Length: 50
Image (cartoon, rainbow, N blue to C red; front, side, top):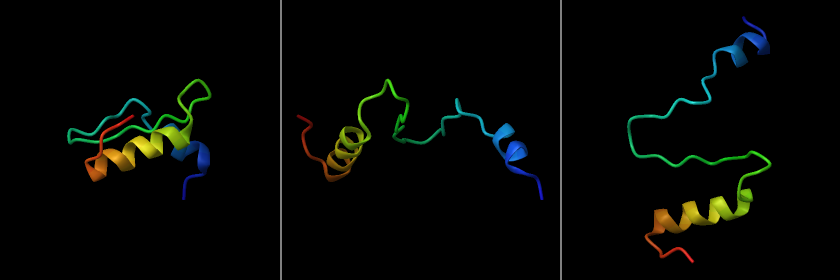
């Protein structure tokens, strides 16, 4: 079983699926996660974003 370095080496952070999706950005320079989560939930419920 490969260790964590082997696993992390196979992750492609630039991968985007070909289907509709939402990217949650957890970089320190991104919008707060709470704001991103609220926008995601509102979009799933069909609500207008503020």
